[in-house]
Image (cartoon, rainbow, N blue to C red):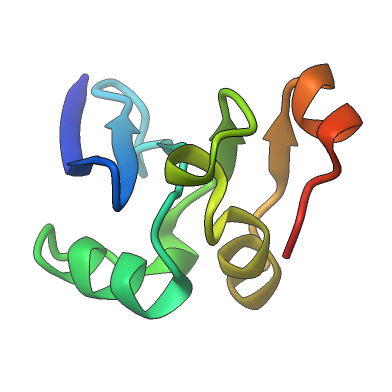
Amino acid sequence: MRFASLGSGSEGNALVVESGGAAPPIRILIDCGFGPARARQRLERLGLAPRDLHAIFVTHEHGDHLGGAARLARTAGNPLHNTRGTVAAGLRE
């Protein structure tokens, strides 16, 4: 299993988790406080593209965790999973 932080701070948080045993590996993005362009740039540093992700998970509704998650999921065709609190707060695109 591999973990890689795309960034962590008030301007955005995102973490890529990759399985170690599957071929091809399963990759999920946990949180995406960055807009799609910045998320793409940060993924490229790891040799990844948004289409390489199998899903995006949002842990809670704060902007630094939620920011561009819906837009990135929509443009890359990734499933988006989130908490009930995030849905209740109104997932914004």
